[in-house]
Each structure stands twice: as structure tokens, then as C-alpha cells.
Length: 134
Image (cartoon, rainbow, N blue to C red; front, side, top):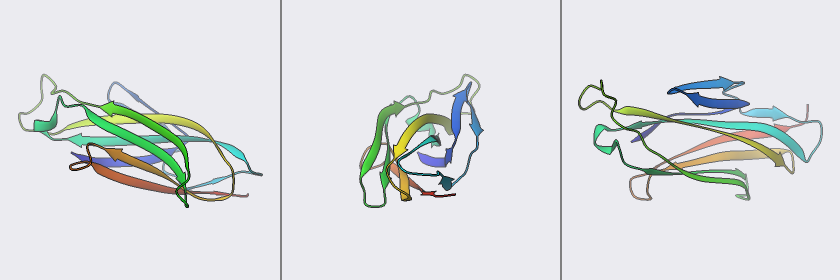
């Protein structure tokens, strides 16, 4: 299993296996004052090996500041099955989208931390971003 892509966006959803984004791929957002409520969506694509299809993989998404203070924690699972017309041995793509309206207390650096799978064979990814004044 690999994290094939991970993005921050203004809005994200997965419909019929396709990822739809609005305002995707940013690392800086602006607010006139703090605390500031921002629109933050996280989109993740996980490439699951043939032998891992059908398994339930734990997912943890957190939003933290640069000092490690956690503001959001989402826990869930992802799995994918073998499509009826899948080529034997081919990896499958599982996609996740989460929309997180969040209030950030200060200007500065933050990160979305993504962890998929168990501690031994799992994958992790950090998406840093900044909240700045206009």
C-alpha cells in the first residue's frame, strides 16, 4: 500500500471512485484576523496492492500546529475490493475526502498529518500549510 496522492483543498469529495476538488493544492491561506475559521479539506488516494484488497486499513488524520498541538482528529477505515473486471495482480485505488471546517487560533504554521495502515506496515504523510494575514 502507498499513499499515491494527498492534497489540501477548499472542498473535496469522492463520487463513484472519482475525486472532485475545489481550490485544491494550496499551502497558504489568508484571514483578516485570528482566531480564524477556514475551509480545509483533505483528499487522499491510497494505492492498495492486489494482496491487500478486501482488508480494512485504519486511517488517522490530524491537524496540528508547528508545536504539535492537535486541533482536529479523525479516525476511520478504508478498504477496497477487486473490481469484477480487474486485471489479476493489479493494484486498486481507494480515495478518501474529508471536509474540516476548523478554527485556527493564531497566524503561523500548521500541518495535516495522515497515517494509513498499522504501525509496522503503514504509511504516513504530512501536508504543511500556513495561515497568514492578507
